[in-house]
Length: 157
Image 1 (cartoon, rainbow, N blue to C red):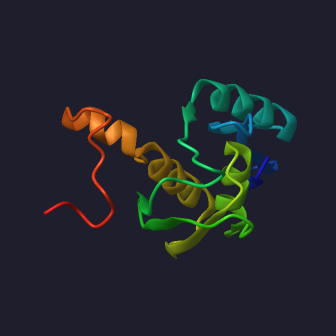
Image 2: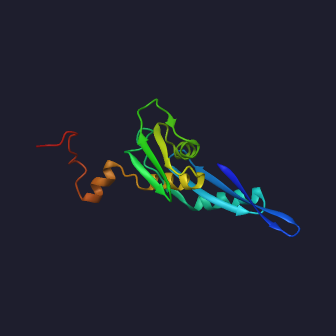
């Protein structure tokens, strides 16, 4: 559970509170999901969020404990820069990207939150970035190139 937001509305007899819970679920093996549940009580909101997170699982390509390439995830006014890192670096990120990355099984990654730091929008932006990640093998398959025709890093002339 990342955080619980409390909202209130004032009625004639007093204030009525409602809660929204942001929950991240992951198997630490490349699958991660996010859900937001709303209810009049915190435990009910958390249970709703867990159910939604289970339905919204995505697969993140993890190569040697990091992501395959740089990417910027966007949601509303929040942007999150996600960069691969070498072995032993760890996850250098804010609270929300760190939680999501660790639950996805990423052990080395750099990130920077750009624009709005709203936790819900940042979480959606991280998921946007993770959804758009592609491995080299996936890109080759999309282009219709054979897997064995990998070019050297400098490019052939």
